[in-house]
Length: 138
Image 1 (cartoon, rainbow, N blue to C red):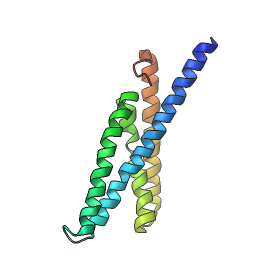
Image 2 (image 1 turned 90 degrees about the vertical axis):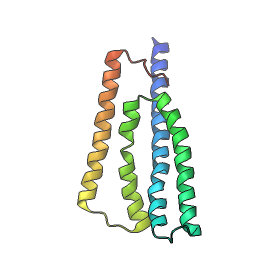
Image 3 (image 1 turned 45 degrees about the vertical axis):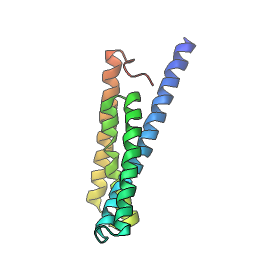
C-alpha cells in the first residue's frame, strides 16, 4: 500500500513540476508582447526594430520546442487552459515596463482568468480520474 502511495505522490509531484515549468515558459513567451510593442515604436527596419523582432523569433522558437515537450507530459486541455496565464503576464509587463495603470476592471479580469484556469484544470483532472487516470504518464 505504501508503494502505491509513493507512486501517486511522485506522479503528483512530477505534474506540479511540469505545470511550474509550463508557467515559466508562458511567462517567457509573454515577453514577445513587450518586444512587439517596443519594435512598433522604432523606425521600420532600423537596428533596434530588427533586434526586437529577432528576439521575438528566438523566444517563439524556444517556446515551440518547449511546448512540444510540455504537451507530451500533460493533457492537452490542461496545457491550453494554462495558456490563459499570458493575460496575467501581459498585465504585469504593461505595468512594470510601460507604466500602464492598474484598474479594478483589470484586476477583476485577471481574477476571472485565473479562476477559469483553476476550474478547468480541476475538472480535467476529475474526468481523467473517472476514465482510469493513467492516460498521461509524466
